[in-house]
Image 1: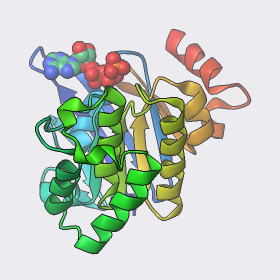
Image 2: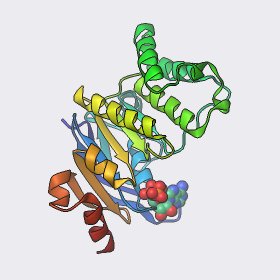
Image 3: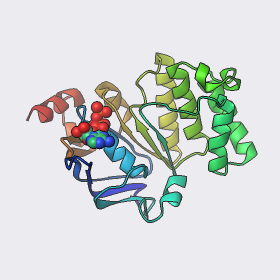
Amino acid sequence: MSVLNIKNLTKVYDNKKKAVDDLSLSIEAGDIMGFIGANGAGKTTTLKAVVGIHGFEEGEITIGGHSIKKEPILCKSMLAYIPDNPDLYEHLTGYQYINFIADLYNVSTSLRSQALKKYGDMFEMTSNLTHVISSYSHGMKQRTAIISALVHSPDLLILDEPFVGLDPKATFLLKQVMQERVSSGGAIFFSTHILDVAEKLCNKVAIIKDGKLIASGPIEAVKGNQSLEAFFMEVQDA
Ligand SMILES: Nc1ncnc2c1ncn2[C@@H]1O[C@H](COP(=O)(O)OP(=O)(O)OP(=O)(O)O)[C@@H](O)[C@H]1O
């Protein structure tokens, strides 16, 4: 069974324009799927529909076989979402914020302290987590969002342009953590404009243009012998 299945998704905003138009794709355990497309193509709209932030007019989205519309709480318990802008609760400390997320997901005390130690040290945030989030840089907020997403070991990680604003070391570490998650049975769907990273990190790719999926599947099958960048330019200009 797919970890994530999107079938004929159509999302229309108030202005009546189809931001996502009849989009279907599926992601299995072990997959890292990169979601690429020009500005305004419909990536964030798709990701927000998957995580249940906004509704959609047509289609069906299931997570682990459960409908995001009919069983939203169950679906949300299986996933973590990091938006493109880490808007966290500024008056909390990093520790308080991560503990708040861990409480929402009923993470046991021992598992949360293990995760806090592992990811806090890894992302060099342990000493900063006692400070209030309003004192953090953009990258520190992103690191905190990443740690809070990992604290409950989600089956499905949904990330919207996760590398924007991260320094080279944090970028390296996030890629490492993403590979670790999928090698232990998780799945990841993330949007990015960095095609070199997508090409190296992902086993699958989906390309969206004007709300429509124009290519998807195993990365080698999609791009053939050319680079992902060359393939993207070709289909984007077609
Ligand atoms: N809240 C909204 N109300 C109306 N239209 C919206 C809204 N959010 C997005 N759109 C429109 O939906 C389309 C898809 O936008 P979306 O944010 O999903 O694109 P994207 O692929 O994530 O772009 P980017 O790479 O710039 O982040 C665009 O035409 C955008 O103007």
